Image (cartoon, rainbow, N blue to C red):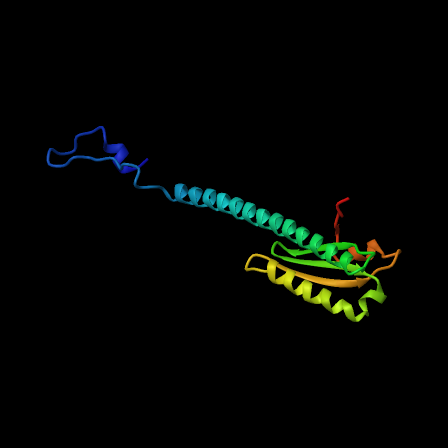
Length: 158
Protein backbone atom coordinates (compact mmCIF):
# COMPACT_ATOMS: atom_id res chain seq x y z
CA UNK A 1 0.00 0.00 0.00
CA UNK A 2 1.41 3.39 -0.99
CA UNK A 3 1.35 6.45 1.20
CA UNK A 4 -1.05 8.19 -1.19
CA UNK A 5 -3.51 5.30 -0.91
CA UNK A 6 -3.25 5.23 2.88
CA UNK A 7 -3.91 8.94 3.28
CA UNK A 8 -6.52 9.48 0.58
CA UNK A 9 -9.43 9.22 2.97
CA UNK A 10 -8.05 11.57 5.63
CA UNK A 11 -7.75 15.33 5.69
CA UNK A 12 -4.22 16.22 6.75
CA UNK A 13 -4.25 19.94 6.11
CA UNK A 14 -6.40 22.50 4.39
CA UNK A 15 -3.35 23.76 2.55
CA UNK A 16 -2.60 20.41 0.98
CA UNK A 17 -4.67 18.17 -1.26
CA UNK A 18 -3.86 14.49 -1.46
CA UNK A 19 -3.79 13.17 -4.97
CA UNK A 20 -3.56 9.47 -5.72
CA UNK A 21 -1.31 8.50 -8.61
CA UNK A 22 -3.26 8.19 -11.83
CA UNK A 23 -1.71 4.97 -13.16
CA UNK A 24 1.46 6.73 -14.30
CA UNK A 25 3.45 5.09 -11.53
CA UNK A 26 4.12 1.37 -11.43
CA UNK A 27 5.75 -0.91 -8.93
CA UNK A 28 8.96 -2.71 -9.77
CA UNK A 29 7.06 -5.99 -10.01
CA UNK A 30 4.61 -4.47 -12.50
CA UNK A 31 7.48 -3.22 -14.65
CA UNK A 32 9.21 -6.63 -14.59
CA UNK A 33 5.95 -8.45 -15.41
CA UNK A 34 5.30 -6.09 -18.33
CA UNK A 35 8.85 -6.61 -19.60
CA UNK A 36 8.59 -10.40 -19.43
CA UNK A 37 5.18 -10.36 -21.10
CA UNK A 38 6.46 -8.12 -23.89
CA UNK A 39 9.55 -10.27 -24.30
CA UNK A 40 7.39 -13.40 -24.71
CA UNK A 41 5.17 -11.63 -27.25
CA UNK A 42 8.24 -10.37 -29.11
CA UNK A 43 9.81 -13.83 -29.22
CA UNK A 44 6.56 -15.34 -30.50
CA UNK A 45 6.38 -12.67 -33.20
CA UNK A 46 10.02 -13.17 -34.19
CA UNK A 47 9.56 -16.94 -34.27
CA UNK A 48 6.51 -16.58 -36.50
CA UNK A 49 8.37 -14.27 -38.89
CA UNK A 50 11.29 -16.70 -39.09
CA UNK A 51 9.02 -19.69 -39.72
CA UNK A 52 7.10 -17.75 -42.38
CA UNK A 53 10.39 -16.75 -44.03
CA UNK A 54 11.65 -20.36 -43.95
CA UNK A 55 8.40 -21.59 -45.49
CA UNK A 56 8.68 -18.95 -48.22
CA UNK A 57 12.34 -19.82 -48.90
CA UNK A 58 11.57 -23.55 -49.16
CA UNK A 59 8.64 -22.88 -51.52
CA UNK A 60 10.69 -20.56 -53.73
CA UNK A 61 13.55 -23.04 -53.88
CA UNK A 62 11.08 -25.76 -54.91
CA UNK A 63 9.92 -23.61 -57.81
CA UNK A 64 13.52 -23.08 -58.90
CA UNK A 65 14.28 -26.82 -58.60
CA UNK A 66 11.38 -27.55 -60.95
CA UNK A 67 12.81 -25.04 -63.44
CA UNK A 68 16.22 -26.72 -63.17
CA UNK A 69 14.81 -30.22 -63.63
CA UNK A 70 12.91 -29.07 -66.74
CA UNK A 71 16.11 -27.49 -68.06
CA UNK A 72 18.00 -30.76 -67.46
CA UNK A 73 15.28 -32.71 -69.29
CA UNK A 74 15.56 -30.35 -72.28
CA UNK A 75 19.32 -31.07 -72.30
CA UNK A 76 18.59 -34.84 -72.18
CA UNK A 77 20.18 -35.13 -68.75
CA UNK A 78 18.06 -37.67 -66.93
CA UNK A 79 17.91 -39.63 -63.68
CA UNK A 80 17.56 -36.51 -61.61
CA UNK A 81 16.41 -36.30 -58.04
CA UNK A 82 16.68 -33.24 -55.81
CA UNK A 83 17.36 -33.16 -52.08
CA UNK A 84 17.06 -30.20 -49.73
CA UNK A 85 19.16 -29.46 -46.66
CA UNK A 86 18.02 -26.66 -44.36
CA UNK A 87 21.13 -25.16 -42.79
CA UNK A 88 19.20 -22.30 -41.19
CA UNK A 89 15.97 -20.41 -41.86
CA UNK A 90 17.70 -18.44 -44.59
CA UNK A 91 20.40 -20.85 -45.80
CA UNK A 92 19.41 -23.82 -47.98
CA UNK A 93 21.49 -26.40 -49.85
CA UNK A 94 20.05 -28.32 -52.79
CA UNK A 95 21.67 -31.47 -54.11
CA UNK A 96 20.80 -32.62 -57.63
CA UNK A 97 21.71 -36.11 -58.84
CA UNK A 98 23.02 -36.47 -62.40
CA UNK A 99 24.65 -39.32 -64.28
CA UNK A 100 28.42 -39.23 -64.24
CA UNK A 101 28.61 -39.31 -68.04
CA UNK A 102 26.34 -36.24 -68.23
CA UNK A 103 28.32 -34.47 -65.53
CA UNK A 104 31.59 -34.84 -67.46
CA UNK A 105 30.04 -33.85 -70.76
CA UNK A 106 31.13 -30.42 -71.96
CA UNK A 107 27.50 -29.39 -72.49
CA UNK A 108 27.03 -29.59 -68.73
CA UNK A 109 28.70 -26.18 -68.48
CA UNK A 110 25.40 -24.70 -69.66
CA UNK A 111 23.79 -26.22 -66.58
CA UNK A 112 26.18 -24.28 -64.35
CA UNK A 113 25.26 -21.06 -66.11
CA UNK A 114 21.58 -21.82 -65.59
CA UNK A 115 22.18 -22.66 -61.90
CA UNK A 116 24.13 -19.44 -61.43
CA UNK A 117 21.12 -17.52 -62.74
CA UNK A 118 18.79 -19.45 -60.37
CA UNK A 119 21.01 -18.67 -57.39
CA UNK A 120 21.10 -14.98 -58.32
CA UNK A 121 17.30 -15.01 -58.54
CA UNK A 122 16.83 -16.70 -55.17
CA UNK A 123 19.60 -15.16 -53.09
CA UNK A 124 18.81 -12.09 -51.02
CA UNK A 125 19.34 -10.80 -47.49
CA UNK A 126 16.78 -13.30 -46.21
CA UNK A 127 17.59 -16.27 -48.46
CA UNK A 128 20.75 -18.02 -49.62
CA UNK A 129 20.44 -21.13 -51.80
CA UNK A 130 23.34 -23.19 -53.08
CA UNK A 131 23.01 -25.92 -55.71
CA UNK A 132 25.37 -28.91 -55.88
CA UNK A 133 25.49 -32.04 -58.01
CA UNK A 134 26.13 -35.65 -57.07
CA UNK A 135 26.61 -38.79 -59.16
CA UNK A 136 23.29 -40.52 -59.77
CA UNK A 137 22.99 -44.26 -59.41
CA UNK A 138 20.06 -46.53 -58.67
CA UNK A 139 21.42 -47.27 -55.23
CA UNK A 140 21.97 -43.68 -54.15
CA UNK A 141 22.01 -44.16 -50.42
CA UNK A 142 19.19 -42.12 -48.89
CA UNK A 143 20.51 -42.96 -45.41
CA UNK A 144 23.85 -41.26 -46.13
CA UNK A 145 22.05 -38.26 -47.58
CA UNK A 146 19.90 -38.03 -44.44
CA UNK A 147 23.02 -38.21 -42.27
CA UNK A 148 24.43 -35.29 -44.26
CA UNK A 149 21.27 -33.30 -43.56
CA UNK A 150 19.45 -33.76 -46.87
CA UNK A 151 16.23 -34.94 -45.27
CA UNK A 152 13.79 -33.53 -47.82
CA UNK A 153 13.40 -35.07 -51.27
CA UNK A 154 11.73 -33.09 -54.04
CA UNK A 155 8.35 -34.40 -55.17
CA UNK A 156 8.36 -34.25 -58.94
CA UNK A 157 4.99 -33.26 -60.36
CA UNK A 158 3.37 -35.93 -62.51
